[in-house]
Image 1: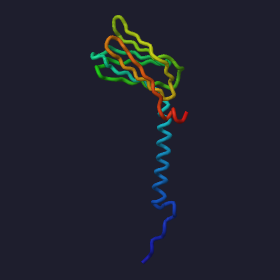
Image 2: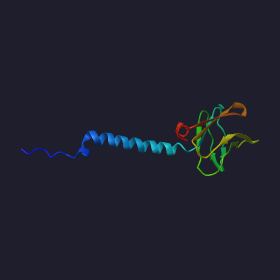
Image 3: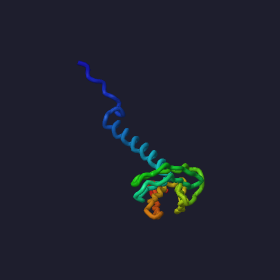
Image 4: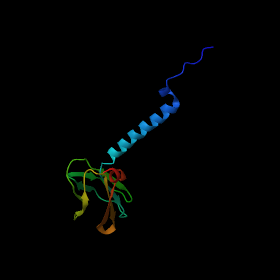
Length: 136
């Protein structure tokens, strides 16, 4: 009977599994940190009615959204280029409805949440990713 040749120490499960787990955790953390630098604008329709086409402008960027149903939301992820600016919303109504909100940076992990209410009212909140708060 031939005894099994012993494997090198680094090939044993008690070393491979923790090493793979550690490397996977580090890679996941780096990816999460890089993705947390993207700023986004999220708009919720709380008006009780569908909204006509919506134009959003911020940081020298703009995006149009088609009809937005009640209780529906849209998200606009900003590209890292451009400077800090106010969020500008415009609805395709007659007369046109416009709203300017707080400042947003195209990077830095900011999330601007805007809720549109009946009567043309809007409220905005800004949050910063905890990754960005913790490591910057």
